[in-house]
Length: 246
Image (cartoon, rainbow, N blue to C red; front, side):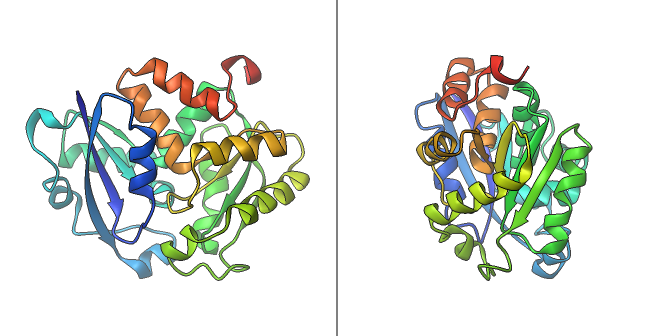
């Protein structure tokens, strides 16, 4: 039995449950802690956890009960950068494996040869604009992008969680129409209320696989923990096949 220390935002109403649901059949235990953040800095495109990382990780179980730390915030990964986030987590709790939705999305896309995506987010301008160069730095081109922040007045994570599924599918379809040829659509934010069956349905309707933050992180957690069969079944369920893009 492996252990995952899940760090989620104090304001996220759905990410913890979604992550645990994706891992419910795997031989893992998920220990959750929550962290607040500097909201003013977050809106400006940065991320400062309150309290700092050593204090946060000390709220997780000690010793060999935790094999991995998963930090459930996509935009924070992009604001900090993968290397900085992993360095800070490993300094606070060394010797483990580490992931986040941003790190996991890149790992998932690389595994399946996904090089061109369209991007839908709920973020304010500064955070939203940071995604295209982030993915470009990892060899992934964002051919079209759109934020629901302004059109839907998404002020909080709870607002994001309440975006209807049909609105998400419609927005993804509109985005796809302007994206040209893409390998996948990426729905970025752990607070979107989507399940694996929802992603599969979106993908079938749009004709392109739809990836999302929490599910990418769950896939990467299974990968890092050596749960290959469950990892591959999860990818297949949302329309990803290793032979499709490579």
